[in-house]
Length: 182
Image (cartoon, rainbow, N blue to C red; front, top):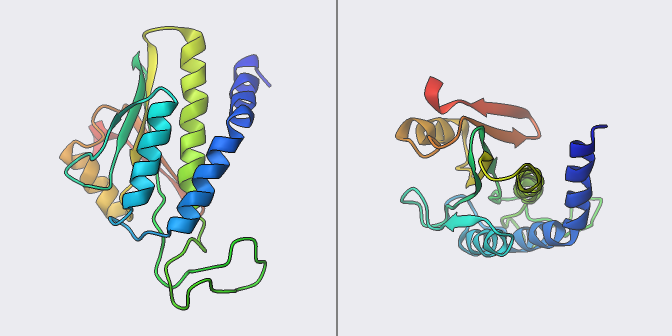
């Protein structure tokens, strides 16, 4: 493993308490798409504390944010998905289906982990950019709008134009959104 990769992994380990705390709080909030008020506030607060420039709300969406760090090229965009889904309420840590709230919202699909993992990736890239110096690149973390069509519309609308490439990881797929090709 290269020294740069090891540094990134070490930094994620160093920040694991922050990352886990965010994931756990997002699990507890269990807010549906476009209603993630507490979640959006939490991400904005944590990212500011970690040295990112944060726009919140963003793109005329009250619950959305864009957090950026660095300057120059390349520009790497990462989409953070953290909305809960209806009917997936689940007691944390239970290995069997056990609803916390009957028919309630929840993260039985792991979106709390997707958002926290995207934030961890942004932390690691930020650390890399800090070591490389001013002008070596930029990382932008965006709130993902649930659904591929909505993400593509966001790209077409210009929400992600500052990114050369935007990554959206989901358990079922990995999407690559190129703002200059949509």
